[in-house]
Length: 126
Image (cartoon, rainbow, N blue to C red; front, top):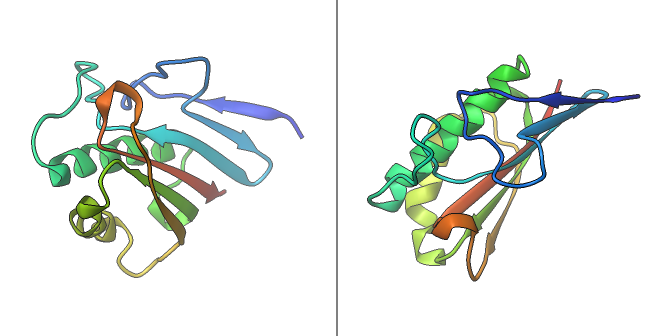
């Protein structure tokens, strides 16, 4: 099998030597998304729920570029700078995964790129 790079201008471009996502066989491995506005390249300001919404919009754009959606997601990993934000992030996250519930891990981290408060990565089946 060969790797196929997935890229879209509807999500922030990579800020390092990586791809937004890679297709490999029947899997789509998506790099973590932080709350960057793809139009401006700036971090979304405001409360964590606004930042979580931007992250989910970025993920949706990458999934769409691979011709799939949230129903295809198998596994997610959420990285939070402050676990006190768990409930607010979970509420936004749950709007995309109401009946379909992928496996998930949530991890507390010391810091994230560009001072982000959260990052979410997904793996989807194609």
